[in-house]
Length: 128
Image (tube, rainbow, N blue to C red):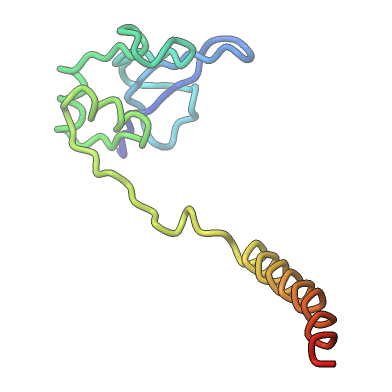
């Protein structure tokens, strides 16, 4: 049985609240779970002490048994000092896409053409 440490959504519409649970990977997000490990309230400030409440001993046990945490739960475990999470690095994320680079090249070509048009009559007048 593949186990996951993941978030199960609770709360009302537009007011999310999550339970950190251990569940079978095949069960639904808010469905059956094996054990509740803590809570996560994203509406609280990031520095609030009860934003993430986690039973670290039980989380450590489930990770040692082989439960795979999701990315968000892995962040919580890393903050608690239980698991090391590697920093992600995507150097291509900030680069513009193909259409944006094409538009920039077109704008640069138009600007160069306009500059040439402005400078051309002055050069002809200076030659005479």
